[in-house]
Length: 344
Image 1: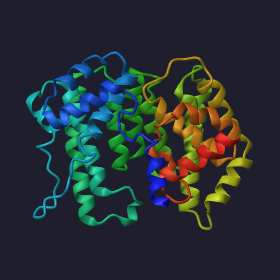
Image 2: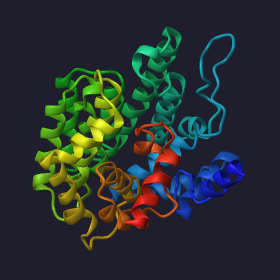
Image 3: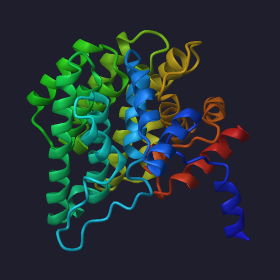
Image 4: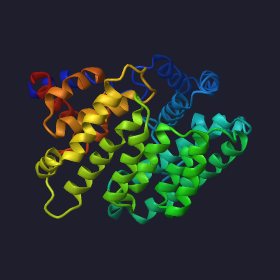
């Protein structure tokens, strides 16, 4: 009975990477199962001057290479195949297409993280680190080519920044790439999220640097910009570290501190009023961002404010940040929080 109820509940969630973008869903399906990259090629060409949508399309196409595709290491070499995925074949057939190179770079990064796993670094085995590093270096080669082929596109620079974070690159190197990125697109949503990540404590930064960066960006962001959500993302990262890495940290204790901190509460207010309630059109990663806002509101007991945010999410829960809550089960954490918000 309990199992049946759980299955009925999970049917309310759509886990597909493309979420409510039916055209993108079909593109990924065709590329995976028909070996036909033409729809993907045309779709990315159409985003050439829409960097926000372009970044999303590249990410979803790249992730679709690994999700459910069985990227298992060769039993003899311990290596992941880097030639047979549709992204590999597209890049090989079209060496002068920056879109093909960029999608393959993202795909290689996804495969690298499948090998490494998402746990803390101390749990990763030596052979996992070796393959992780090899795949990231291959991805860098594709990014180099994409940057050369499309010198004014900020998207390769955002991907370069993300991979350098994976490699724990020095701060000065990250900042050089950051400068190139914002020169091309000062309000690049993905680039700002990655730069925030680079300041996180789990990547060698600090809570202070992370919040300073997030709040300084949000303070000058135009109304309706998703950059107003950066301080909320920072709080989510802070909570993850505090409850999992600090001595004596608990989910309830961290939530209580979050509720009682007036600045973090002000950050939530700003995200609600300067972004969520603005009449601007939805940006490409709206559903990912609105999940972070719902999470922050839910963790601080602001269930009434969270209700319309959950309504805007609909079926499209994202595992992160919900998996960062107490029991690591993203779906159950989401359902609990949504149920409270609906009752508020």
